[in-house]
Length: 247
Image (cartoon, rainbow, N blue to C red; front, side, top):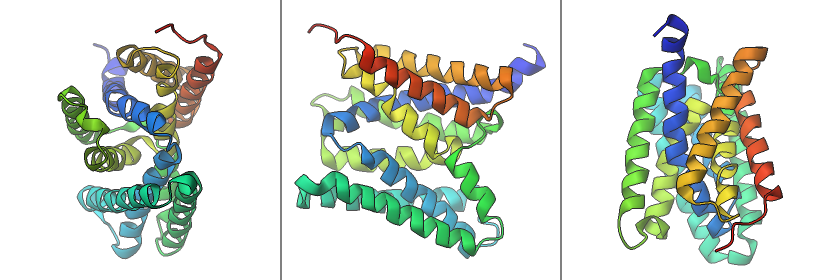
């Protein structure tokens, strides 16, 4: 293995594991009809990281991860309550949760000398520089989601299981991949499942789109997170043009 391929091993592993985590969760999100939950919970997880940076001079990876997970769990619980309390207005309310999280993030950035850099990374991370420690976190998230998906009785479809699992997975993914890429990876491949494509085939489609985006980044010197998110957006657009697979 030459030096270039060795360097790309960590980002490739991160995108593969993220696909195993986020595509099944994205299919659940579309089935539930709560698309804005992706953005809302991811934004709240980012808000936790930024708040930690505003309160602690050098929060470090552990404190940032704990803050992201705690914020995401709290936000996910709030979204679950709103969706049950006012089901007809749930998308509008979840949208407001996203805006509130974004507003708090901007306020937190104002109190952190490095806040702008943190915010930029949380929106569109440079996937090419993913550390192996982040890959291990995504591996843990993948193990959790795959285990829950494999259990009998549709365990992952239960609110009490789905919302906490979703929050924990997003809190890990957002710090590594950025909000834009996480949302695109949740929704782009999952749209194919609504056209009748099996989840087991939608995951490889997501991986292929991620690799295409990384290829664009390498070839054209584009930011890796943004180019990968664009590839996943294109994948989602192609899904709606595709004729549904007969049952």
